[in-house]
Image (cartoon, rainbow, N blue to C red):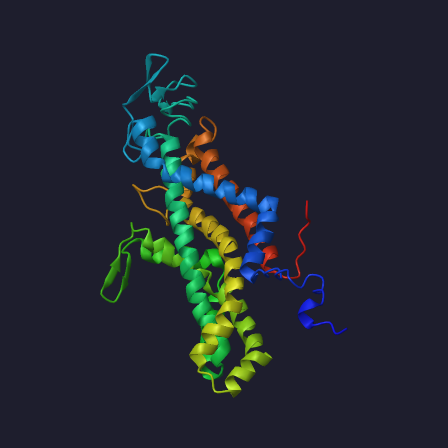
Length: 345
C-alpha cells in the first residue's frame, strides 16, 4: 500500500510558525528594561525634568512671587502672621538682615536668598536652564563629533590629517581651562559669527562653548571606530561592487556608529551639566536675571553658615541628576553591548 505524501504524518512542529526574532534595537530595549538601576535612574530624570517644567506653575500658584525680582521689603504669611522675608539679625551687634529660612510649606519652601527671592522657585527655573544647556550642548557635541569623526575616518588622506590635527589642538587644552577662557573672552561683548550676533545674556553662548570643548572627546573614538569599519569585509565588498560612498555611509557606517553615540549621550550630558554649573558659579555662564543651579550655589555662598539650604539644594539637585545620568549611561552601554550579560531576576 502506497502512502501518499499528504497522508503522511506531519513532522513535529511543522505546523507551528517559527518564533519571530527581535531586531537589535528591540533586544537592547528589552535588556535596558531588565536593568533595575537604569530604570530607576530614568524615572528619577523624568521626575526632575517634569518638576523643572512646572516652575512657572509653582511660581504662580504656590510661591506667588517673582523668582527673578528682588523682594527685600516683602513679607510672607505663616500661620496667619505676616513675617518679613528679610529679618533683622539677632547675633553680634544686630546690624544687617538675614533671609527667612525654610517654611516647609507653600511660599519660601526652602527659604529666601540675599535678595529675598524664593529659593524653591529659582531652583526649578534654574533646573530648566541647566537641563536645556546641558541637553542642547550634548546634541550639538554628538552631531558635530559624528560628522568630523565619520568624515575623517572614512575618507582618510589629507582630510583625516587636517581634521585630526584640529581635534588634537582642542584636545591639548584642559576642558575647564578652555571653557573658562572662551567664556571670559565672550562674556563682555557676546559672540559675533558673520551676520549673527549672540548676546552675552543668551543661553546659546554657554551652549556653544560647552558643546565645543567636548567635541574631540567624542570625535576621536568615532574616528577610530570608522577606521575599523572601513576595513571590514562588508564595506570592502560594497566598495568593490561600486556602491556609492553616500549609501555606504548611510547603510553600513552610520548604523554601527549610532550605538556609540547613544552610549555617549547620557555620559556627555552629565559632564556638560557639571561644566555649566562651574561656569555659572564663576559668573561666566548663565547671566542675571536668569538662573541656573550654578548661579544659585553662587548666590548662597555667603549664606553657608546662616541659610545653608540656599547652596545645598542646587548642589543636591546637580548630584542627583549627574548620578542618574551616569547610571543610565552604564545601563545603555550594557544593553547595546552584545557581550554584556544582565542578570535575570
